[in-house]
Structures are given as C-alpha cells and as structure tokens.
Amino acid sequence: MAPPIPPRDRPHDRLIVALDVPDAAAARALVQRLGDAVSFYKIGLELAMSEEFFALLAWLRAQGKDVFVDLKFFDIPETVARAVRALSRHGARFCTVHGNQAMMEAAARAKGDTLKVLAVTALTSLDRGDLDDLGFRCDVGELVLSRARRALAAGCDGVVSSGLEVERLRREAPRELIVVTPGIRPLDNTAESDQKRVMTPARALQAGADYLVVGRPIRDAADPRAAAQAIQREIAAV
Image (cartoon, rainbow, N blue to C red; front, side, top):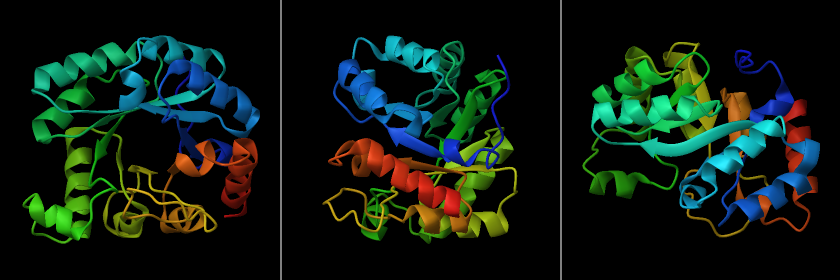
C-alpha cells in the first residue's frame, strides 16, 4: 500500500465528511450522492454498531476513498494496542485514541506503517463549564497544548482539536503535528447543534488546521453535493 499523502499537498483531500448515519446503506447512498466532490470520510460510533462496519470500510477503500475511523479507543493499553493493530489491517488512514500516556503509546506502537493515530484533546461538544465539571481547572488552550505535546511524545501522529485552539498549537507545538479539526460550520449554517466550539472552514485553515471534519452541514443540506462543493471552493481559495 502506498504511504499516505502528506497534509496540505492536495487541498481537495482536506475535507473529511462525517458519515453520521444509522446504517451502511445510508452511508453508501450519501457517498454516491457526493461522488467526486469528497475523497475522505469519517466513520464513527453510530456506524460501528452496524453489522456492516468493516464491509463499509472496505467498500469505501474500493471506491478510492480515504477513511478516518473515529472510535476514540479508551481501555487498558494492551487492549488498545490489539484494537489498533486489528484496525491497521483494514486500510483506514486515521484512527483516534482518547486516553492517558500509556494508552497513546500502546496505540502508536501497534499502528503499523500506514495507519495514523490521532489523540483526542478536548471534545468540541465541551465548553468551559463542562470542563470544570470534569475537574479540568486549567485553560482549555493549555489542556489542548498539553495533550498535543504528550501525544507526540507517545508516538502519535497528530491530534483532533477544535479550530479555536489550532492557532496556538501551530505556534507552540512541533510543526509535524497533524491537526484534524471537527466542529466546522459554514457561515450560512445556523442549525441547532451540540457542538459548542465551532469555526468556519476558512478560519480553521487559516489558523493551521490540516483536515476539516464536516457532518450535518453537508448531510442535512437540501443538496449535499452542492454543499460539499461550496466548502471545497472555500478550501481551495484559502
């Protein structure tokens, strides 16, 4: 298998569409509707509950699509390592780990040559009050930067981070860090959302994000392909 294309080399590949749908049939239908407007997809917990999860992953790869498996592995290190090692055989490009140093190190050791491990920093559904409730008394930016540094020290390839923290990451964390940014909302998207820390595509890229994860603004659009193409034009312009 060819090595992954480095970040920022192909602007079209920087848009990752989240397949937050209930089953593989709905996922395939959306992918086919989007066609060549999108080359990278994220599959997560909802589809992991589908009996066709790995069949869908294989189908996406057969369509020439890159796949980001977002399951946020969190367990004892040996279990995390075994899960990542098993996933590495299925052709995914990215996966996520959401745990302590030992879990991140275990994931990094098991990832193989082509799978990239991303550490989750702070979920975009959390705000300052949520972090206080969880016992994180530090500034959100400090938490994200600390997690990023520890992830790289553990051998991870990058992080998942809100666009609000990316600019600081680019100033203070090593440049080789891959940054994948969820919570992306076009300016004209005003739908209610459980994402509390969001950013527009252009602003996230200008801050230094490598990849943008977009779900509902494309999935729920009257014309998903047109919505994806509009974001691709914004990415190309930046």
